Length: 442
Image (cartoon, rainbow, N blue to C red; front, side, top):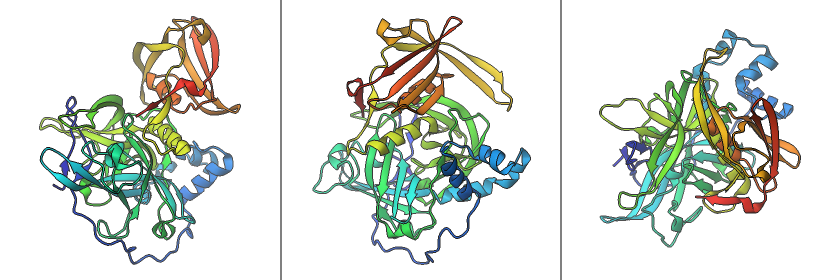
């Protein structure tokens, strides 16, 4: 039934936000009313994107761009970029999604449709191509069975037979949709990457790509908003703030009879989240993507506890899926760093210069052979990943997830440089990882 939550976590009572079922769609005509005129009026976001390309700094934050290149300071930034303007631009990077499966359960067998959301993270209007990020659970069903037709990764793996996407302003859910293919999906990260190619709709659209926030941590109290297909009623926005910067939830991607539990690191928000928001973007007030919405806690005694997969994790997973595009589910991850580690202390660092309350975790090497170049007891401080001699990713290890996030980036042949403190002495260890050091994470 429309708006019904279809899957629930057994532990946290945390619900995935795919909504459905929805009526079957008929017709595939492109919606009328488009004038085909695009790109004639540059706005501040277009200039920001150009600045990132020209400076060779794809991680240039929007606020830093305004300060460094346009000399805006403090309150001027708030005036230059209103929340309303940011939200309306994010509408242009959102898509509504409808997936169709052939499902077999103990009670029914047949075609079933569900709805969710997605975010455009790359677009080529001339070619009519766009790349979309959504949740894996939007395009996956544990009840799906093999039929005579399938698409993307193949229904034999539980993935959707068809995936239809609508841009903002389209005649959802009737016409004006594109069909997308899955180029990557991971249940362990609850992320899927979709691709639309050679679309006349995209060529004539006003769609734009969303930009990732480059920070490793969201800040509690930051204003944020969601944009997605709430309740399956087409794209809408809601506003709130970050309630907690990092926590873990457990979700069942399987069935009650055959559970398939997965743990996800998420940020918590009080922003209104409903069925159909799964896979949609959570943005900061500058319009930067800080998370992908994937769940909420449902209880008569709990209000406004929604969750989004953290951008620091998601953007690295997405980059690897796009780069690999090998037609298989899951992604290749390092199976062994050559040493073990754990959090040995955790505390508040107080308020920083921006008034944000920080948390520090001490990540310590717990067991390291001589070949690792590190000793048991060394405290990890920084990780740098180099590819063909060039740095492709780097983080200071302030929290355990800084380490686990950055390691997602590593590919066979990459050099990883670890900096640690051994007492009062700084030490450095470097290792190049071969293909044998990787495993496929589902």
